Image (tube, rainbow, N blue to C red):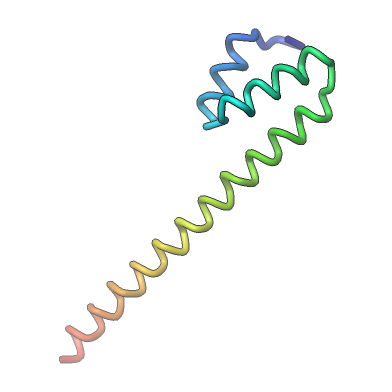
Length: 78
């Protein structure tokens, strides 16, 4: 592994980040081939997928918040 990261630490980090086995294997294969730019692109794609998931969940939370707001508004008006 490059820099101060051990292979074990990188594997754990990828696992903690929710990377699939295939992504981890691809990342490590790119490491062996010295293809750092491709590694960064792979991580960026995974990050983007995680962010998309967060945004979907935020929308769901917003829907619930709006429903609670409407219920509370109805109770105070009636």
